[in-house]
Structures are given as C-alpha cells and as structure tokens.
Image 1: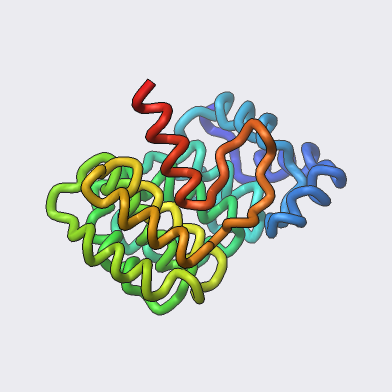
Image 2 (image 1 turned 180 degrees about the vertical axis):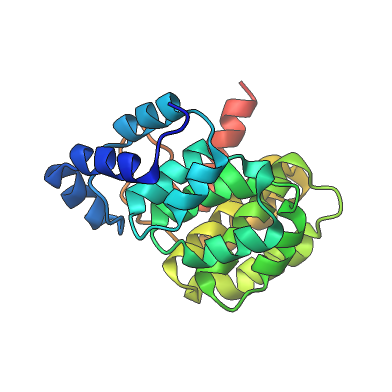
Length: 222
C-alpha cells in the first residue's frame, strides 16, 4: 500500500472507530476507539513508510499517531525529532510505543536517556527512566546502580503515577538482573510499598517490586 495518502489512512481509521473500544481505552487515558489488532493489521498492509508516518504524527488523532509509530523507521529520526515527539505524546499508549518501538532503537537513545532522565516534566522523565531500565537489562556497563537506587529510594514514593511506574520498573529490573543489588532493591520496595495493592489477575505477575523480583528470579532459576 505504498503511495497511500494521509487522508486515505485517516478515513480508514475513522471507519475502524468502535465506541466500545473507545470507552475501554478512555478508562486508561487513551482517547481513541480503534482495536489495536486492527491497527496492527493496517500497519502490516502499509509496511514501512517514513514520510507517511511523519504526516500521521502531525495530526491530532491518537490512533494515527500510534499507526505512525508502527510504520516509521526508528533510526531515521534525529534526536531533536524524538525530543519534540516525546513532549507531544501525552496519552499513555502513544508515549509507551514511542519509547519502546522508536526511541530504544534510535542511534540517539543514550543522549536522549540522559537528557530526559533529569527533565522537570515527569512524563518526559519517565521516558528517560524507561531507557535507563532498558540499559539495566541489556547494557549496564557504566551505569551507577547505587545512585539509581538512591534516587528511587528518595523520590519514588511521591512522584506522579507515570514516573513512579517507570522508576518502579527500574527498581525491579535492578533486583532481577543484578544479584549483588537484589537485597537492597527488595528492601526499598518493601519499605516504600509502591504498587503493593495494585490489582493483579491470578495469572499475571504483580508490579510490586519485591514480588516481581522474586517471581522473575524464580523463573530464571528453573
């Protein structure tokens, strides 16, 4: 479907709008009504189209922004492009996909991580923490894990939800991946009790860091 115009894609997205899907999504802060399976199927048909992705991102349509992130070339963006985009990504799903599908794969990921990590905007800072968590798991060399735990211990309890979630993920990842820091990570989680009472289905792992760490370590040791 190369050569498809923005108008054609927006019309197709409008046709996929489902009020029931929108109702569910809005409970999670996402203002669109397109089933994600159908959105991914459309992205598969469109294939990679960087210019179309840029055009879709510039709309005010959340489903169009999500589609843009599925059909873009993550490595084609400059650092300033992604910095602008993360500040425009105000709904949770757009923010999550931008960080995980695009920023993590971009050659400017490390400079963005450092800039975003210290940003005063908690949503932007959460992107920095997400990139840091990725490094904790995949490339921890050069990271000061003690300092990260110090920051988490001091600040996580009273941070806004999205940043708190990102910091908690980092805490759990340190405990899971780095045995020498595990006891401290578990201790921090137990003292702060962040997400301790988060409703978790029986077949899912709790986001409460001590439980999360214990379960993932158990799986690794099988």
